[in-house]
Length: 121
Ligand code: FES
Image (tube, rainbow, N blue to C red; front, side, top):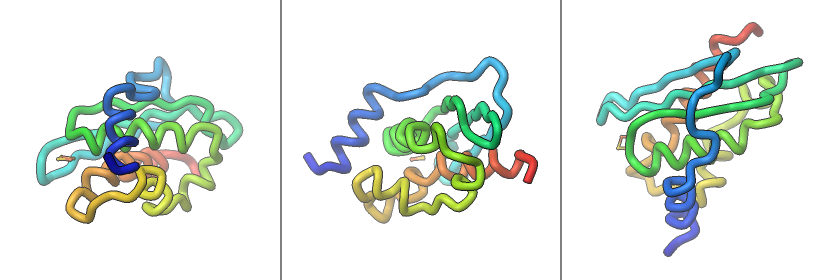
């Protein structure tokens, strides 16, 4: 099994931070129009930093595993840092994603960017 497959399987079987926050400060939802799969990302923010995060959604193993992994990457980061977070950081944490599944892997990152659009500058 490749490192990429191991990461996906681990997060798919044991998703981190799955569910909903009681009172999120920022929420972003993205749907992949090609398949209808969706990821919802909720953030709790204090003094410009993410203090808690949850994801929810329905979809393929890659999109849901990437969402789980993304929650680990965003916790404790500033909103400023997250605004400049590139695709490469998530893709590299996933261990390299095959080209045909990029839309799946980046769906949660698009949900994060949508959530950040809802935040004050
Ligand atoms: Fe729909 Fe992966 S097949 S997001």
